[in-house]
Image (cartoon, rainbow, N blue to C red; front, side, top):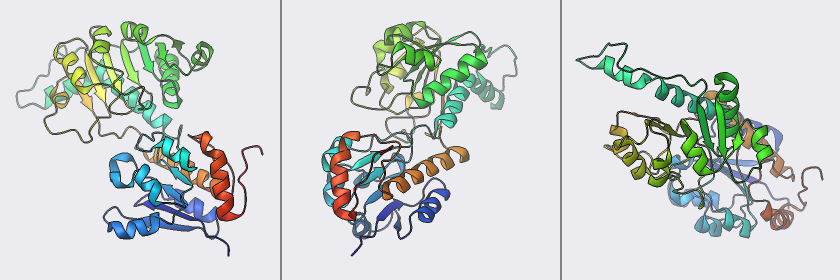
Length: 353
């Protein structure tokens, strides 16, 4: 008797076009929408028999439903998990690989929105827009045109830590629009690859000491966790700005607060915190030279549509026995193929195969 493929997801799928696209392309697919406030028994009833799991963003998902060891052991039919965006730090990729479970993400789908958000933080900081706004709104307001004098981005040096889809888009905008000198620290790219992405490859120390703005665009991993600490902030130019639209935990928040309080840097623009939301009274929230947003750099209608369609297209590939376009763990492929063939009687083929 043919096995019915089953895909589960929680609450929403970024944009309604995603599930519509999958249901239209994969006839006979059982697609199950779950609610986080359902009873655990009713959730696990469906999770344990699912072949695919489309995740919500990490901040909207209970840790019980992160694709890690316990979930993997409880879901013997699981063949693939898909992140909602580019990040997948809530996924135990190694455990998935050992179990023959593919991990896919939506790298690139959010690049434009996050790049534009990064640029917005850069402009607000350099032009002191947020300080001017706060001063004007006070009961005893400051309407002086000279109190909060800004600076242009034109001709400044931008340092990008990570030059993937988002980083290279930021690099191109800043080089082409603002004539900025763009430096990049990315150990996974060669000098030529960085040049092709509109940046000059440098060491981390060179980047920190030369940049007027330092912006983080690398994933959170064991190697990147805590990579920007107090010693790194001390190396930055006096008056330089620090920006992160990547993941909390890459920079040390206590170290950033110390750097700000000691006027070692000029300010910070953050879309991410290690704990989200940060506690009320968090020192960085109280600092006058910071601007923050609630991890929504990629939350635009355009981006949600792009991410939703990207995920949907990969589910169509998976349930059509093809290799997904944005595979995070290619080492899982052979075991995955064996498991897929045992379940559905057909062996998946690689792209171009």
